[in-house]
Image (cartoon, rainbow, N blue to C red; front, side, top):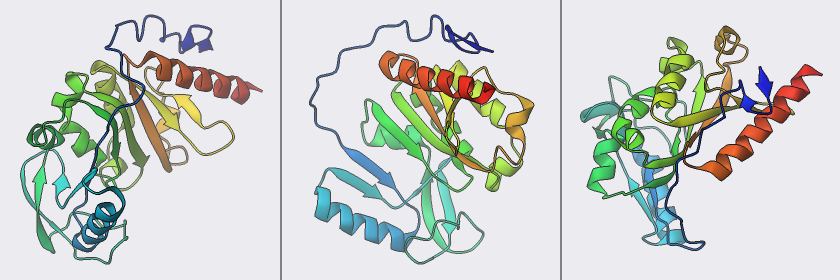
Length: 225
């Protein structure tokens, strides 16, 4: 049930903790992780030309463990391939380890697009998430890879415990629906869980959180009509 208190009556009291004020203008830096060799080379050359040292591009894989994995040597830009038993050996790290190596104090936007390996990347980010160092998190939800055999509600519950409020960005006229504490069996059906994105907001990000909550309320009201 949705109400003036927010999606599923759960928004009351969320985002009540204060956070440090951030200046309107500040220098930011981007970090791009790409395991495919040819795509990495294109990205690195492009970022050096466009952003100089403003974007760090690394050839490696992100996951739930540290070590090495094999990745197929595919043409640049192909997104449908992932970790396999054959290919080029690529270093694998957790995002927690990578953030420590890069001395990252906060991540404004963490965007994960790993063709079904998103959950493993999230598991390797528990340290960052538990310390509330990620302001906004975005990842894909579909039927490929681990998503084909795993339940989304377990991931949403984990993120909820880590202080992240998640919203489902679905296709259609009213795409924003709250997922945190609003999951149902219907959300696990192949039709709904075909291909979409989840955006999760740190509960301290009050302005963004209330904007998404308002959009979710509007979508729910529209779906009732």
